[in-house]
Figure 1 (cartoon, helix red, strand yellow):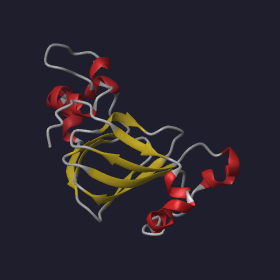
Figure 2: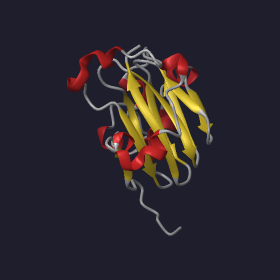
Figure 3: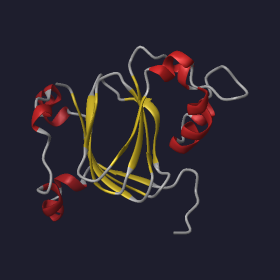
Length: 168
């Protein structure tokens, strides 16, 4: 309850969901049926990390980014709540990484989810703002992030989620 860090610890555990010791956790969720097709699975053992258990305190999260390797993603919230801000692929970096005192890319604010939310988000380009989707995710809800979409996610309270990137 006393934790006040701007960028608190956020655990992305890629091994836990496949560990036999965590079988009860991994059997408690499944990939949403419309998102089951995944061409990355064709890579077999060469596949890069793609699914994670996420555990983090309030204000932990992921700074505004686009997922790698042309992947889409889904995120199912087990407990807590998360604020999501999404922009479509046609929005460019210079439109969303702006601060009050600058009109250019603010890289120093790009590495913290809460910093971007508080310092860049209020100053996004007017056109980008008109295309923004901003909402709160609650336990049991699954969010789908299409390929190429910018997204910033901030835990509003201690949260646990499962997420997976895929190419479908």
